[in-house]
Length: 195
Image (tube, rainbow, N blue to C red; front, side, top):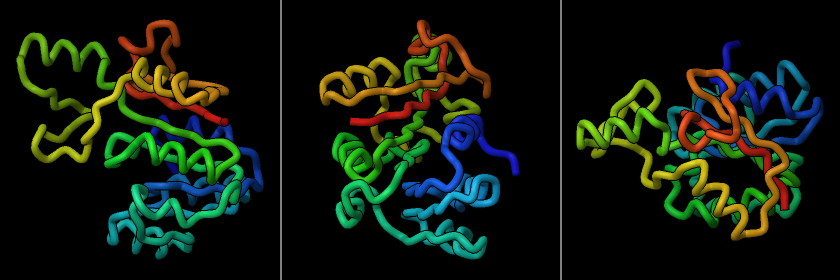
């Protein structure tokens, strides 16, 4: 099974047998890879009923729900990892969703598109319009991305909240790029967090 580059980073860094909650799990691609490859006890929360049905058809434990409201129902420390991949920027209250992730999981993986990537900047500068790219294919009016964050925005938010980033990976064209210039060069970021 081929995983998106950010999901591959996450899968590679989860211990076998861990208890995982994948929030915004889609059709359960990451959950299936973790279950089949590492014997992980994976659970999922997904807002789209078609994705929930597809995940359940794969034999995965996924419920329909909204990260903005339904994470409050999960117990403190109920999972080794809470995962939010390419979903933070689509939530109404990303700061509260992040707080819930860190309450539910002993550690949390968060991945998101970096809206400060040089191609996004160039598109705005030279074209004067919101970019439509391979990784951000929707137009401004049909995008699920309602919060446009950057690597530096996320780092500052973690500092403000006293959250520790144990590790971070920055990806461009599916490969790792340098952390020092991540805000400019990374298309996606993956953070492993703990309180």
